Length: 198
Length: 140
Image 1 (cartoon, rainbow over the protein chains, first blue to last red):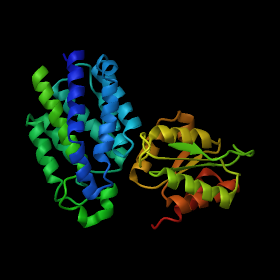
Image 2: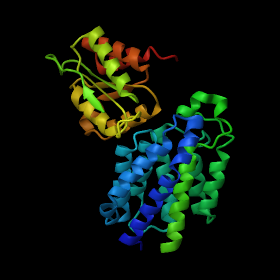
Image 3: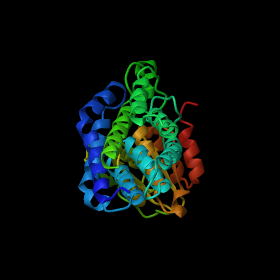
Image 4: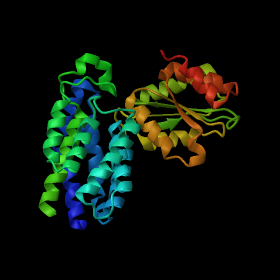
């Protein structure tokens, strides 16, 4: 069972990963989007960190709900509703003491919610292209971090169909999707911290 | 940042128009065009900028704009780019159920769409007609 200290450590690890890589995410987004992904995600996770005492005191589902709501309200780009929806859907699906199987099932349901929010499908050069392989890895017993990293790399040759990057058409090919990168960063941060505290 | 244009007397009888741009200046300018070209017969509100005031959109500001332009006949939202649309859809879902079904995002260019939608709305058209008229501007 992850206690409040563990929940705090997980939140700080997620926020730390996003904030430390904000410039890189912005650079990726400048290549194929509107150049605000790093800045937006940093703003959102700084708002989560500002509330970490309250949030980490809550059980996992309620904490995720608070994180999702904060991201929706504070991020300011499309990634706010997308990551917010991911967190809110996980909040709905996860029990207070989730197993790996719970995580896999909840992530699959959350992926459907993100698809609906972004009107997007897998294979369109988005965060979904990382989240889906992560859910599959959680289910099969494979390493979700390796799956996330490989999946983010695999967005480089993809052509964007959704979001600002889709305006570029073929010119979106050759760049990693910033949302795929931020998803992979979050997966790696969560997994590393879970290994430490579980 | 966000602000609303001045409300007028006949509010509530016409569909409201909300303008959501990444840029506060584009949002304000579009609202000015609507007011000058269409007049004061429609509830009108606009917002632009992220929660820090930079370019972007804010769910909180959109929720506020919907409140200011609220009409019992519903609200049509005009947006510029992707995040404005996603954040507007999020804001609609966060509305009470009796309101959520009466707010739509129009798939139309923001400036022309806002003017056309407001023109339809000022004549007392239903939300569905307002939206369809604005969306006729979009390439199929």
